[in-house]
Amino acid sequence: MAALHVMIIGAGTLGLSSALHLAERGVAVTVIEADGIASGSTGRSIGVVGTQHVTALDVELRAYGSRRIREWAKHGLDFQTIGYLRLGRSTGDLALFEQSLGFQRNAGITSARILEPAEIRRLVPDISTEGIDGGLFGPEDGFLDPHRFASLLAEKVREHGGSVQQGCRLLGADRHGSGYRLKTSTGEMNCDAVVIAAGPWAGRVADLFGHSLPIRPERHEAVTIRLPKPLPYVMPMVMDLVHGGGGTGLNFRHDRPSELVAEIHSASGAIADPDAYDEQIADASKEHLAQLLLERLPGLDGAGFGRGWAGLYPETPDGRPFVGPFDGEPRLIAAAGAGGYGIQLAPVIGALVADWLVASQAVAVPGAAGFRPSAVRIGA
Image 1 (tube, rainbow, N blue to C red):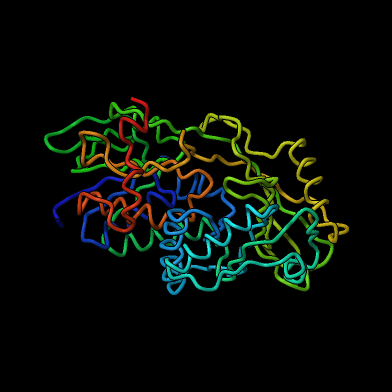
Image 2: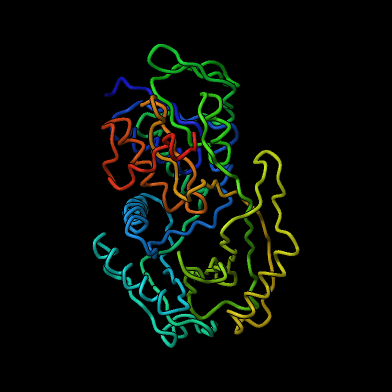
């Protein structure tokens, strides 16, 4: 297997995690990146890592990621364990939370619990629980710096003998024998297999190989909240949204002693050109965020907006990432479409990419076999 040479297109967390998982299995890897490490969606993420989801597969995928991130934290990754609280607005939401606790226990996570409104107020003294019936809380969840995460993955790829080439843009691709010849801005490169991990550009890259990959680059915004004085407690990540239920989509968390970071995790955003989109938060978005924050955090008198920015969620039509080989091409692998969950899913997506190229099946999470970019999923 060591003779196999894989080219990974994209040096965000999905591409670098794929490279590392392959390199750990003895595969020769080269990552090419048109710009710099974490220069796309990764670098504009707020870096949340949490397992408080309500379907078995979502929990299993994130449990794998959480375990790997904790391993990497022992080798220089700064992972801030602040907890993750998902708010519920109905008995239906609380029933989903009860199911989630079972899914988490099956995945080896035993610390999560359901909080009553009074417990939520003790955990987050500045929060209003008006309209909230309870919350799903994971005390071991947290956040990391996306740039540092990607840089650590790149370092480990190099330690395993891999290469990460920045400023190397893919211009074209041809089949070459049983492999591929890539035309790049720095010259031609031959390889045995290719992984498309180009984030919002993944659809365009797939076009170069004659395949369709329906990735929608959706524009989403985030902003920091400056506090007049440091909080006397650490505010966990708070998410006001339940899959299949209700909520505003508002989420916020501690970032620094006198600063929070907030965004609205909406169902969809405006489709944007990844090469030319407004990277600043709009005034109307700030006004909407301010209204939601005043309702949910009425105790934060004197808080104001700091820097704001916009990034792209690479979304798919069915809301599931594309991970695995294209029909008829077992060595052309997709690793794209993680939406707003790229940081959380990067470890397991990397493992699944390695599984497909080394074992020809999804091993890390067998239930993820359906993530393949099959003709049915891409609408071909």
